[in-house]
Image (cartoon, rainbow, N blue to C red):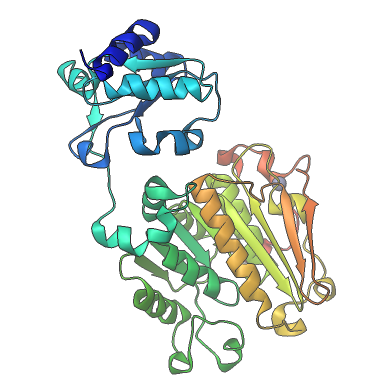
Length: 385
Ligand SMILES: [Zn+2]
């Protein structure tokens, strides 16, 4: 026997081997992870339905992105049950305590008629385009595919929505929806960088869709040239996974909040005022604060002037809109620390960044059952629920 075969025989004695059926049982009942370590070209024809794919060559480098709990059981699979022994040994050496190798590998999985799926893979064109994302372990091919399958709705394609739309499109978010009923005006061009002089007088949604189309023809843009109100909000928002609120008035913000809470959609919210900007994410988890938790009542107009009344440094919504795009991508990818329950405040004039804690309010609308939340006519969004 070669030293390789000797080593494999030794591993068979020292590691636990399990059948594909046992592995599936552990995934369903013991919160185990099924890790397929075959190469990318080996999984084109099928991958066990519950499996995470992490090629053997990337195993040690990236396994903590799949599982950072060293006690969680991991069942390792390869094509025939040999490479999985070596992969399992390596995981043990990394400190994973409950590691199993699946006997007979994917060949046996198929022979046992267990469920498989054809994995979605990036095209060669997408691999080239998103190459810098693929190098980031927190994104990678799995994350890029997640972005390409994601649907984000931008409410308003003005100061905040313009940069957010461009970066989300560049990042490859598969479907971008835009709600805006306004036309491009000359005074918009100081900050709304998605529009140009040749678009003056045209609908902002059409101007933005054209700019996104020039940037990335691989994604889909859906335009909603309407003012959001109680009659269309649920129908439009329910088509998306995440909302990016770039609206400029309180009534619309309350409406977006209530619709997102009812539908359970994360709402990445921002506001700007002269040199100051705020970003937060109103999440869909039970302990996440919502917009009404912070502003239960509409502030009097003199306390909350709009940009049209108070002015804004043109580049400020650029910074804040890009922060919204970053936050949206992180929420979609499920990575990092997000701004749920927190508000990031940026003061450009004094170079100050601070994070404020947002508490969930008692008796707020966000504590109600979704079926008990009813949108009100937009004119009625002047006060608490
Ligand atoms: Zn609330």
